[in-house]
Length: 420
Image (cartoon, rainbow, N blue to C red):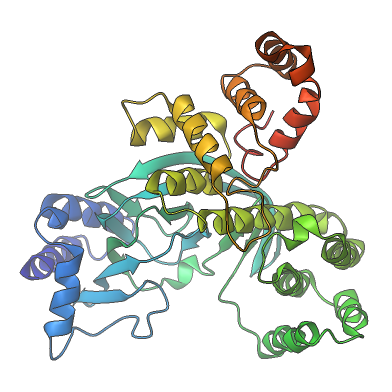
């Protein structure tokens, strides 16, 4: 652990010479992490063992373990500190930071996505509407270093591929200049996840018993609440309702007309009250449904390659980027052939005790379906695909292939990978 003390002392000395200028701190921290190369000589398990052996640890910056599984503080300076974060689960939350610094992968690997958000309207201090675009998507492995820039300069998401993963983080405390620390909901909402207003929080909590006991006046009470709520509160109410209606089986909103129609009614009230800024809320919750369903399906499989495939579908909305990331992970393989192998395996994977045809979620997936996926992945148009299927399988077996194409394009697994 002396290496962490040496790293912290070096950063403190260099940064003090720069008068603690936060603009240069990310570069200082990143360069120091790269020079120290701690992952080459200290394992994440060494950190755990050291932590358990100590009678007294350095002052812990997150004693409740609210961020990390767990977070462990190893060095504390007057204006920054060094943590190691352990991660047992991947995360799909897109966020910015109210602090700056740098991080280094210590154990495992991650999909790192970097976004831009073009603001359309600042509704208030705590919620904005706009347009999100993905500008960088890459695989990070042990030893890789990234600078953390405060605020909108660094809107990103890390999805941890391995269990556990661990990250060394050198960071400042929160800066009031870069608050709130927005979380982003694709495709167009930025919201402060740490906003806490007693009355609003209690109203959101009061929704739980209405759904848990299926109180007959639930919809009337929620309608009344939404008809009088500001946009930020309305979005929080819709998010809470969405969680309750999704239930324990996350496919409910896809498969049951009741919950879907019920939720659509609540959204329509918000649209009627808030107009243009609420017009795209359907897309926000549809995207959330898709992520929930993919997370659920990822939980059905244990093969690391299959879990990697689902992680790509969760985090990347572009065919070309997905193929590029597959090539990065498996440089000696044809990425399309890899995806076809995974697709076949998942279509054959039955899930016991769950109402789903297979891990892929597509009923009756056969060799014609697999051919459709291949042709579309290779960039063929629908007409070219249909012509190829007739040539491969004949008129009788390829009959109805246009419906199969629509079903595959619209599936949770392939909607982004095969988007036109």
